[in-house]
Amino acid sequence: MLDLKKRVIRESQKPDLLAVRRCIFHVLTEQHSLDLTKAERIQDENIMADAADQNVEDRMEFSTSKEVTVAPTFEDMHLKENLLRGIYAYGYETPSAVQSRAIVQICKGRDTIAQAQSGTGKTATFSISILQILETSVRETQALVLSPTRELATQIQNVIMALGDYMNVQCHACIGGTNVGEDIRKLDYGQHVVSGTPGRVADMIRRRNLRTRHIKMLVLDEADELLNRGFREQIYDVYRYLPPATQVVVVSATLPYDVLDMTTKFMTDPVRILVKRDELTLEGLKQYFIAVEKEEWKFDTLCDLYDTLTITQAVIFCNTRRKVDWLTDKMREANFTVSSMHGEMPQKERDSIMSDFRQGNSRVLISTDVWARGIDVQQVSLVINYDLPSNRENYIHRIGRSGRFGRKGVAINFVTSDDVRILRDIELYYSTQIDEMPMNVADLIG
Image (cartoon, helix red, strand yellow):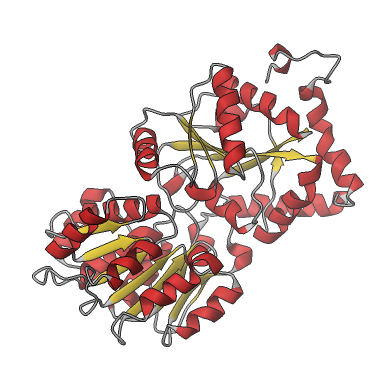
């Protein structure tokens, strides 16, 4: 499928990758004592085949309190009429698994921990709940949403505004890298909901421009990242300014046990809606690897994939800012049109890049993990892990960017000899199987 010989590389310097890569992984796994026996492989294939016959969401097992019931429709949740109008106008017809369980509990005022896969509507879960409890006649901040990245905070603002389109809702994205004066002006005017990053939100609270006395709900989105060392103190800094009775909602695709333990410090008798870790997979997406053996072979393989596939939109993940810049330059030198983004870019530049990508003006985005968490671009059909994530829990966030809300999506992982153990660890952690990329991969990407 891939015409690797057309790359400007001497055949004497490098063997043909197409022939080599189809056996490399098996050799590597044997070297690392990772190969399964034939019987185990057949058993695994049977299990995976059975699983594929069932809808992913239907198989999710939720660990919930006894009083939690499933609301099969949005009408069954007894939501405001204007909110229902916004939900249907946004394109939702029936609630997802997490929505059908969590929204009613959150609207009752319960502290809630909700975990579900990427692309199953977690953002809408808390957005709908926030809009339901708002008193729009009171132009004060009543809900605060904290996110680990500026882009995610802005996206949440957009979702809340869209779902609340018939409710005359005020929602402001309070994020770093933007004009402080504009934040002050918006907050002084009065915002029903503030979606922001911890540092800027804490700053606005300390300046007393973000008034907290009317806040009823605090939402921690992508809580695993927020509660890591980098954000933990900022979260506590914000929390101590909130009214004592503030409801806390924690949502994420992954919730490590230490994070669950830590939430006990600021949650009271929370209702838990959790997917078991061994159920936390992305079987609805196609996952493949390409064995490239050496780091320097990755670029040529990427170029050939790019040439061969018809890509609606794709995201390519690298582990470092330097690698993003290097790969972007190399792709452009080879006359490929790509854009790139990482956390050290000025906010205006990041906003412009995201806007172009959302509108489809840019088809391929090269990024670090700053883009991995929760950014929803509906047309992304392919995710390429140029580097496997250094943190295995980021894997689900990365590949969840493709095939969102049931669309076809493909994830392709470039695997060197040094990456075999990492790939095997990811398979075990998510109880999934990542197969070698088939020759007809072009047919799988919509």
